Length: 203
Image (cartoon, rainbow, N blue to C red; front, top):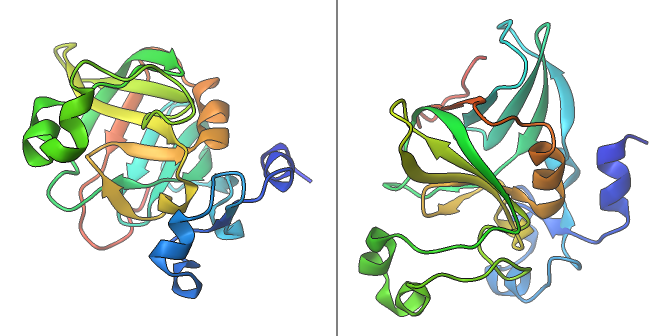
């Protein structure tokens, strides 16, 4: 049993978008993260890549809801993610400008404008913790000029959202998976968020 699967066997995670047909949205959201069983297809997996990319990069394919952490020699660890919903996902090339454990979360002005009922009360920020939208870890994506883009690769306490386009633009992993990934990613790492095309990105 690999280290990725062993941790998940200690928990109960049920479903993902592949299994959501068997559960109503209401039923899924009535479960806690500890009760939810993640579909085996969404577990991290060592894979071969076509491109020989440098080690330590992250490549996100929103079309298949996959994040590839490159290991070099055409190898990578493939994680399943949730991504930004239509109109909010942003493609591009970035770098990891900062990392935080149990990060504080503050909604952007655009988020507050879109949905003041949900976000205005958090305009001054929410301390890190189990209910924080950024989950257990967050990696902050900066542009070529070193500016924070407000995009994050982060955890979530809502594992049923993995494999779907539901976020405000960021890429999310289960808390367990983001902790594993976080420990491997260095400040300055390259991050590529590919375009939404409806077809799998060949990497």
